[in-house]
Image (tube, rainbow, N blue to C red; front, side, top):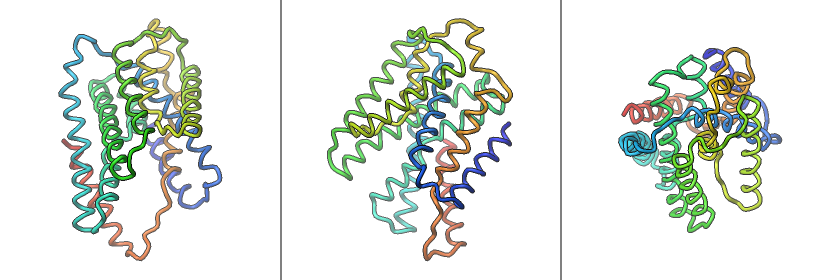
Length: 281
């Protein structure tokens, strides 16, 4: 299954390079959001913590903070020193290397049969915190670069509220479980965020809200819980496979301008090395 997901990802990247998908860009983005919401709902659903031991996550947060900051700092230095970029795009480029691609990570680890391991549980915690750190860093940076924006403050308040609810109200929603229901919840949640983005200009990504909703849904019984753990070519596999393909489709068209191919490859290899060195923390 891992090989199939890798091939779907590569197929999506090739599609983004050879086909003009600009006319259906919004539709593809919405479907990607629904698939990511499904994955993060499942991750939140499986996320268990003791409210009396929230302090034990202090070190996880520190690790996630440094693992997000180090790649960003290394990229910023590289863009400033070797590419002579202005500080604003250098910082933004650095932060683009900081977050873990949580949806891809979880989909691949589940496909590899690692969902019941300690490694998956730890990666789940660090990846969610890692993405959270990047979001919290981006909001003040947007204000510094583009000026004060009330929408950014609203997003920050909402994220803090979602995180509080994730810990305070765990297992409080007695809702139907199962793959079809999770997909339905993801569809509704993505629709709500899409409406807020276009009507109120509140740009809130689906990752944190869907994770919170997964935390809030009650584990009613083991039989229902197993409904989201089916293996094989189930709806769960199809959604995650489609997500991998759409992630590849979202890859921008490569344009190297007047730079030679070998120089471009050199930059890509060095930046990849720096990003992974930062993540190795």
